[in-house]
Length: 268
Ligand code: BTN
Image (cartoon, rainbow, N blue to C red):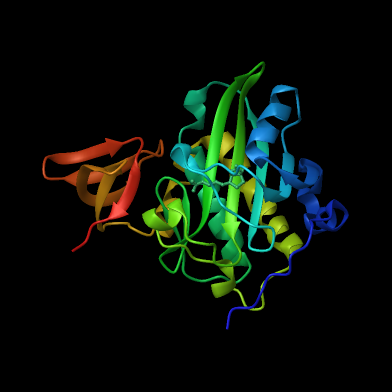
């Protein structure tokens, strides 16, 4: 039987030492409750918060998902946080960033012993075929380049059915990790992997991470439909992502690049 993750507030004093050499890269703030870690961190970023600012909330009252959806979570059942990362240059350098983040999350979960972790373009984390986590990357131009607020939500226990369940069945980390890791250790592994992946991304873009992403890609070489809302936009064989993070679809008329949308597996 799946074991419960104990509900507990993150203690920066406990998290810090678990980060090892990456400790100095992060400025950690913990809130018992906020509207949305991404909304609050975006506001702080505009006021000059440093790169590496990490905002964790036990509870969000208005958690946001992609495409205007809400992200439902509860303090005992989920982990919700946002990370601010600053980049030099223009938005063009950040193509594929959300895919890179997904790779970091998958690696962290695997380092903790989870098996069956997969990635779904553009930024869902899958576990045994269900959605265990989501990523919301928001970009803004800043005085010295770009800022990215990277919001991550992970299901530790099975969430109540909501909008997301309709698009993809939910999964929970408790199904894959028994006993479940301490939340501090989970967060530390996530931060260590994120720092490593974001450094590589900053130096070489998504191109240098693409092969690793393809290996984790759950629907590589499988028939898929690309949905635009409820409408089937395109369908074909999924060839993964190109070096800019665009989805490649082998269709009847050739290889097409897709820059946005929701991917859903085609019913055979
Ligand atoms: C998605 O799959 O649609 C993305 C979900 C992202 C949810 C996280 S939870 C922490 C951060 N704060 C938010 O309001 N959203 C992100």
